[in-house]
Amino acid sequence: MPQDEAVIGCTGKVLIGTRGSAGPGEVLVRVRGGSETFLAWSEDPLPMGATVLVIESRGCREVGVIEWVDPLDALGGDTADAG
Image (cartoon, rainbow, N blue to C red; front, side, top):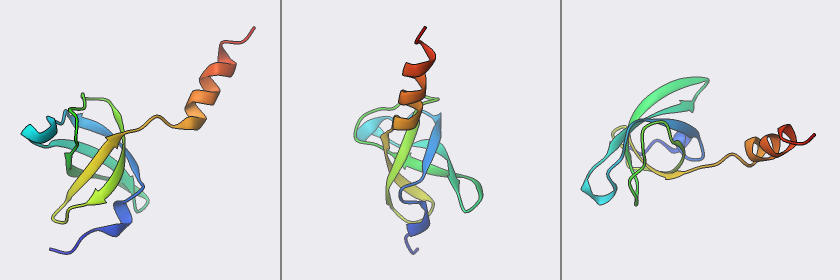
């Protein structure tokens, strides 16, 4: 099956935690104006609820992900604590 290049660079949330090399989890990715689920592989285990960035398409609705912290969210959090 062909790779899905549109999903690379998209962010999502872990629905079922990944297990690193022991197996995939499942992520909900914001792509194509909606949200789609994919099997997700990661180098290190990621817990349910973690935000991820899709770094590769493995075809057949499977993606490679890394944990992601949105830099804009981090900036917003710092200013909210001021005062």
